[in-house]
Amino acid sequence: MHVPGYEHSPGRHCGSVSLRNLANFYGWGFDEPTCFGLAGGLGFTYFDLPISPHRGFFGRPLHLERSFMETLDIGYIEHEGEEWETAWNAVTNHLEDGRPVMLFLDIYDLDYFGTDTHFAPHAVLAVGYDEARVILSDSEFPELQSLALDSLRDAWNCEPVFPMQNRYLIVTDPAVEADSSPVFETAVRDATLSMATYMRDPPTDGLGPGRHGLPGMRALAADMPTWLSLPDPSWTTRFAYQNVERRGTGGGAFRGLQRDFFQRVDHPFGTDVTERMASIAADWTEAGQILKTASEADEDGLQSGLERTASAIDNLANREQALYEDICSRIPDG
Image (cartoon, rainbow, N blue to C red; front, top):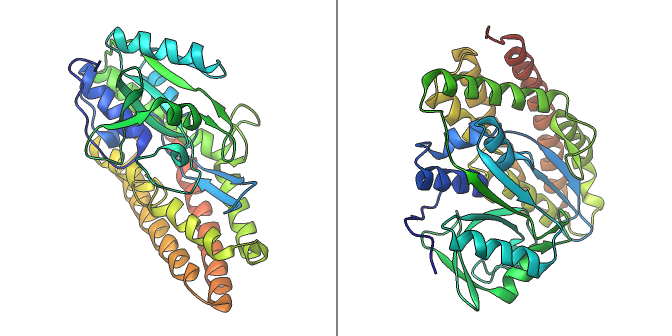
């Protein structure tokens, strides 16, 4: 069966595309950058990996999808940790009721990706199934994808990156009042303040493994020059480039999506905030290009590239801190 009326469309980032496709399905009327911004989508997490490439980072927080729901007061439920049979039965029941279900997966086990790299959480929407397969709406592909249930079972349980067990999210009450201008303006304000606050002073628990926010950026900058001692520093460096410019980041370590959000909405924080985010996104892209070049260089070139990128990211952390402090200091009345 397929969820009636669901239309798939690809995009730049798995989480914000899944939210955008839900917005289309439920009639909320938000494009991808708007979904990203309303989710307080900008973030940072730096983490060690037990397997190659041994280091990784995300330019978004792990709570992005649920934050979107909470900002807009959308009814939803999210589950993780259930056994396969319980979780899969819940998913199929929701699909039978005409609800797409967001699943969080490891792309390593998604046959249609054809990759030997673990990368999670990758958000997709389950929009149909039969006795042997699930139909997935995946941001990376122009068409719906069919996946064997045995592969889904493996992809839904991730250990190497961020441990997850059968995590899924369902919209239970799609009513949204954001077509009201004051409600939408409040959502834009609250999501942006939440993003800036998280980046400046991330909570000490509840965010998952790794170092988060600006402390995570500074930890990355401090650690990067030591990567030459890792088992495969060229691949670690190439993976870092991918975490800036590829792997669904939307460009500039997700800063490009936040820039586009600021450009699309009438936010109350000043035009300079939009301009500064655009500059930050461009300089993240430049840092990514240094990493790409370094990953293809000899040992001296690799070390030089890592040191140059570390300096650039340290500078970006200072600029981002100043930007987030300004956002928090410009809280409008109301």
